[in-house]
Length: 252
Image (tube, rainbow, N blue to C red):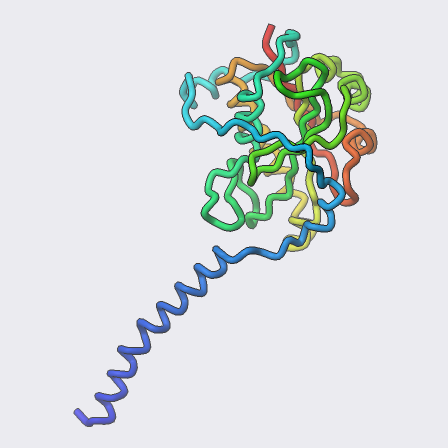
């Protein structure tokens, strides 16, 4: 074999590991780098120093997944028994909590097209609805697993009116309001993004249904509401729209 051929083979053997190593490094760099916060502008109006650290979520429960699926029902009758903060924590983590923090985007409990996570979760707490929480509108921060108090006050009556007078909205201890920042998904997928957003809200809501069963709570999803009224109550930023209202309460 000629010397030049041997040299070429040696170069190839040396280059292949370098190329592979470089590709792996580049991939890990994409996963671990801090992304540009394209949503900073739309969230700036929500900044508040009034935050409540939620108890850590539990990763096992009193009943099996199969039993929770078997028992799952839409439940609309609730008692006045306040929820515990641990229960609220568990419901929010189930809906949109971080389950894999080592990836920079923070993988969540419900799947999202392209890992874009357009959903936001608000908690409307009525007076006496949750132990350790004053009445008001709270915003859930998944990465920190915190609630931020945005607006003080009991809005259960206003929410009921916005939900075409469905009285279980007023009677529930809390109402989870799912909203979507549409542009997060549409900037990549265009009009197809709407389908992905609606699919994602269904995934998250079903998680809440199953978690409520394990906690002995009742809940129901509501799609009949006046969007503009919900937007006013929550004081939503431009480009963020309500998708679901979900009353949750202690069962009768």
